[in-house]
Structure formats: structure tokens, C-alpha cells
Amino acid sequence: MRAFRDLLAAALLNVAVPVLLCIVAVPALLSIVSVPALAQEEAPKPPSQNWSFSGIFGGLDLAAAQRGFQVYSEVCATCHSMNLLHYRDLEGIGLTADQITSVAAAVDVPLGVDDQGNPKTGPGTPSSQFRAPFANEQAARAAMNGALPPDQSLIVNAREDGANYLYAILTGFRDAPAAFKMMGGMNYNEYFPGHQIAMPQPLHDQQVTFADGAPNRIEDEAHDVVTFLYWAANPDAIQRKQIGVRVVLFLVFMTGITYAVKRKVWADVH
Ligand code: HEC
Image 1 (tube, rainbow, N blue to C red):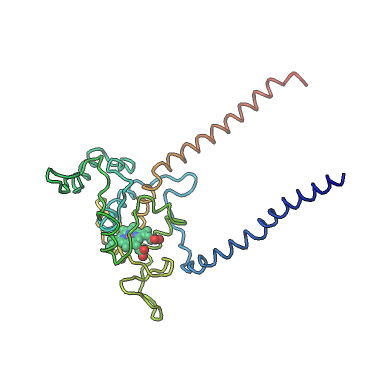
Image 2: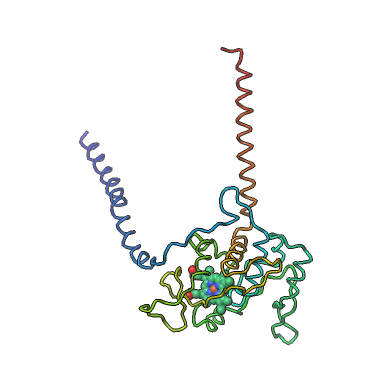
């Protein structure tokens, strides 16, 4: 009996101590680790914008996504790659096969090497990868004052509250407050953590003239390019939502039918 009690005590000790440690020590450790993160989070929370793709029933404003592709091509593509995209993917924002062929053909893409082993370039085809502005990371950093313009294929998903954050960054360039110490080559941005960003303000009013004549204030251009970047990072999101809605409707319908059948089958039993 005594041995059993000792065993029980030992087991309790073995279980209780780790559990207590987990409850007390882990959160304490975590809070120590998260202190530097808190210190960086001095940028204000990006205000929420009205997006075609948000909410359960959200769709994608294709015209906006196409204008956004124009903004990306004319402005952002000078510095940011989108390596996960191929021109044929643009079908997803409603471009026709002919439009895709001519968009790709207008871009000079790498085509391997020639007979002398020198890199060759030529017009792209729908299966070409989006052309990257720099040959490699070192070239990008050398041109950008040491900073790396991140690949934009997944950038909307790679930042918290991505769409609102990107919109806030693109429209958040200001003159630095007088007391603020800026480092050389940096730009003041209200929403970038630490407020100093190596990217110069990319968008301005009337910077891009849209083929469909849509308004092109800086806010419009930012809204459109974020819509495009959202689609790039979530090409199936809209379809997923539509399937989800159909599945829920189906389940509601099936529940009704099942209940009706149950009533019918059991009607005489009571
Ligand atoms: C002149 C080059 C240049 C152009 C043009 C440019 N960017 Fe950038 N971008 C940069 C650099 C450099 C960084 C890295 C900034 C840093 O780390 O301080 C950056 C960073 C970013 C970031 C990441 C911010 C973060 O949280 O890390 C986003 C988002 C972004 N750019 C979006 C855009 C969009 C959208 C466009 C087109 C409208 C654009 N950029 C045009 C150079 C550029």
C-alpha cells in the first residue's frame, strides 16, 4: 500500500511540475521574447478600406485587378519581382488569350544562353515567368541602397492585415516631422514600422493613365494595385468562397429534407 502511495506521489510530482512549468514559465518566457516586437510596433494600425474581395460573399473586381496589373507593370515592376506568376495566369483577372500573348510579347524575358554562352533575351510568351527587374538579390540591393524590394507574389499574405497595410504604406508617405532623425536614403512613412522605408514614394496622382479612363488619384492607383496583388496571392480565394456558400446552402437543404423524411417515416410509430 505504502509503495503504491509513493508511486502515486512520484507520478503526481512528475506530471504536476512540468504542467506548472508550462503554465507559469512559458508565458513568462514568451512575454520576455515579445518585448522587442512591441517596441517596433509603433506604426499606427492601418485603417480598413472597402475591398471587393473581403467578406464571405466577396468577389473580385476584375476591372480594378486589371488596372492594378497596369500599375504593377508600369511602376512597381521596376523594382519588385513577382516570380510565382506567369503571363498565362492573367487569365484569372479576365485577360483573353490574345491580350495575354501581346502583354507577354511586349516584355523582354531571359531565354537561356546563346551559342557563345552569353545570356539571351527575347519577347515573352504566355508561359514565360513574369520578368524580374534584377538578376539576383545582390544586384537588387546594390541598386537600392542595400535594401531588398521583396518579391510581390505573396506579399499581401505575408503581412498582417495585408491589403489594408499595403494600401496604408502606398498612401502613407509624408514629410518627416522636424524632430525625427532620418537616415540617409530613407523615406518617411506613417505606417511602416520604425517610419523609415528604403522605398521612395512609388505612386503619385495621375501617375498611371488607365486604359478604361478610371480615376487615377494616388488612392485609386493604390486601391487597384492592392486588388491585383490580393488576387496574385490568393488566385483561388473567390472560387473557394463560392463553393463554400454552395456547400452551406446544400447542407441547409439536406437538413430540411432529412427532417421531413424522418417525420414521414416515424409518423405511425407514436
Ligand atoms: C524604386 C524602387 C521601388 C519601386 C518603384 C517600388 N518599390 Fe516597393 N520597395 C522598394 C524597396 C527598396 C523596398 C524595401 C524597403 C525597406 O525594407 O525599407 C520596398 C518595399 C515594399 C513593400 C514591403 C513593405 C514591408 O512591410 O516590408 C511593399 C508592400 C512594397 N514595396 C510595395 C510596392 C508597390 C505596390 C509598388 C508599386 C506601386 C512599389 N513597391 C514600387 C523599392 C521599390
